Amino acid sequence: MKSIYSYLFTAFYNWLRDSGANPRIMVDATKPGVVVPREYVSNDMILISIYYLYVSDFEILPDKITFYTKFKGKKEYVAIPYSAMTELVCSDNGISIPLSMWMASIDMACRQYVEDDSALDEDEDDDEQSNITFSITSDSVNSRPSDAKEIKARKVQPKVNPNFTMLE
Image (cartoon, rainbow, N blue to C red; front, side, top):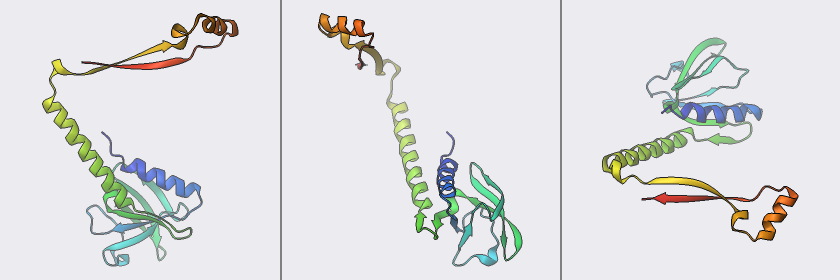
């Protein structure tokens, strides 16, 4: 399964961009794969603007974002893995999105899903699988005859009720 991080980041980024915000990313510069100018790192963290007017060659990749931006007039290459993003900040409107919290929650949910799925694989026997069938019934079948005539006369589609059946 593909990583959801790039999709999550893209959704937040596009929303902020469409809202006219100047998004900045708080980055943990100690994480593997982070490429930033080290002279601007303070307490292992760096805050970098990703406002579209301030960056060039901006790419959202499956495992990181990359772009060029200027630091004191000097163009620098930046690469930020999703695991290094701690917060998406927009100080101009007070929005702060704790990306690390979102990523940790997703990681936990994915691990739980994989564990639950593998437990099913171990315990499941092909002969004891449950099947679900889906059928559609019309109210006109079970309704009074006058209702069925009325439906036909008005050329109205009958109501349809889904019916789920679990087969053991």
